[in-house]
Image 1 (spheres, rainbow, N blue to C red):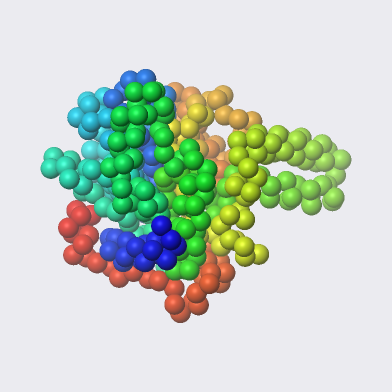
Image 2 (cartoon, rainbow, N blue to C red):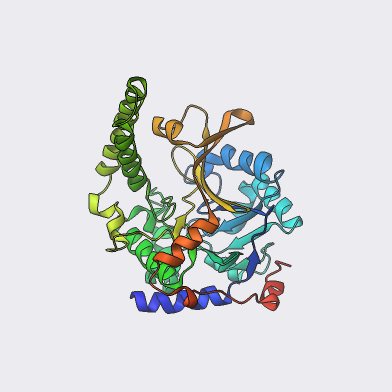
Length: 374
């Protein structure tokens, strides 16, 4: 799919998506790519079941968050919906609690797209959701729309996974595990969001992004900041800085071994000198060390990581801004956080389009009523 084709379809998606306002006191949590299965050994979420259910039950539900499930929640390419529903009674009960309070938004992805044809699915389904904060439009959508294979030929993906990958015990054979396709998707969405002057939050690639930066780039910037601080630091602080640099450098080397350097740096998104902070990714719920999510809370946006105590890589313990200990030894780490108004101003000033041309979607109340969001 060419960028022009995607850009046109993305404009249509944003214009047709229901719109809500992010006011002070309003909270959203965005989870994507749970890949729910039948509870067996090939169920990708099974290792993180306790983390997901505890986070929803003991943190997000009692703290009045609206839950946005941003695609690929059920893995219908590998399993039938009745089998998934039967295997996850507690999780669906939690979804029901959010829905009863009108605090559930269900966005489809490429692995659960066939739910649009289901007659007995209990929750309204949408392709995307606009959340407006002052002058900034936040568009939440899964992200598979940037891949022609998945957007136009999802049945091919389903055939490959159901009849080839599943019998061979191959875990999710998707764009998330193919670096070239993953970065192609991210690049298209970054360019489109930049040119439209909006903030895009996706899933699909399973790679957490904050302000268009990957973990690789964030670590590089952290090292550069520490090097500048080292020049003016006292002797005790210099010892701490050296330890942090060694830790971050080890993590960078680990990431570099998993992919080519040019495929993990920001240069793939843009040749511009300044990167526009318009692309965010909530990551996934099937990580080896835990799950990631994006939170919107009044005037802030944050990337958080949930994991079992003692199972994180050391750099997360050092990098986290805040830690919240939940029952059963589960910890919520706030990894990144920023002010939405400031991000919106940076998008407006650094994006290609003039401020007067930035896109603000109309509030389509009739469409919101059709999707059950009012």
